[in-house]
Image 1: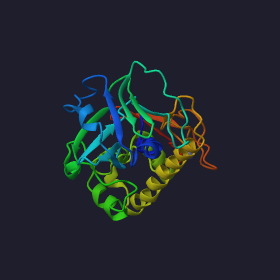
Image 2: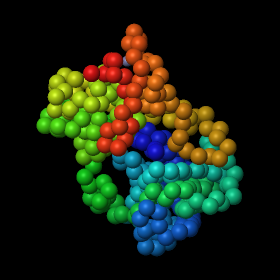
Image 3: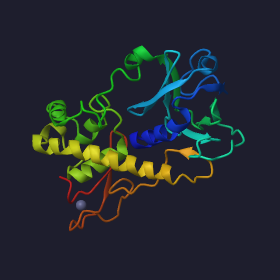
Image 4: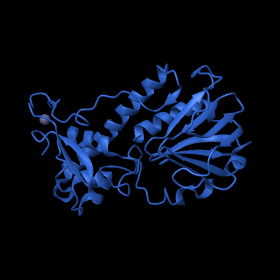
Length: 283
Ligand SMILES: [Zn+2]
């Protein structure tokens, strides 16, 4: 499932083809994904100029000159591809249409943006730009982990009375937006904090230390995504999935990466999701 760094990588990959460009034609091949598409979506998109491509949590937001914003969520299996980009960054011919190509945006500049989603957990919506922050999917989100509103004092205050495990607290989108399972596991490893520890039982200094680690873990992954865009040679023009080295995620049974630890990465299930951690050095 794409997490914040993957979504940010998709946003950066789409920007050269979409920002400032007019959508010459929008093609919508089915009535819905996870939810029904908004009424007359193709008509409302056709002819609109994309003013800015933003990201909020795991949502990509394309502000249009029509006063509306196109919200894009990749869900579990959503993929975006760019073909025919005229700027020379992504020189892929338009591929033959595939079965799960649900929405296609042909830009006036010759680029084609395709949203493909076999499992259809993704979503697209059109909302008033002025009221974007109050959209049901965005209104209750906590601050962006890479933004200024998310800082040490904030996190200490939000975790003070939380009896839930720290793992669950950091996954709570009301506390911080866009952190997912992979990067919470990696954050807790770097912080030396057990995912089982109750948030309220963590000392303030240990909580404070997690804030720069969260930023670092996400920034490292975004950087890896950026490299994947720079070496963009994938045959199909797909954006956002890249190779990244994890310390604990997906490494059950493997040796701990921390120098001198000698522990073995374990996997436990918390709230129905896998937590990977080193029981030896994460306390
Ligand atoms: Zn260890």
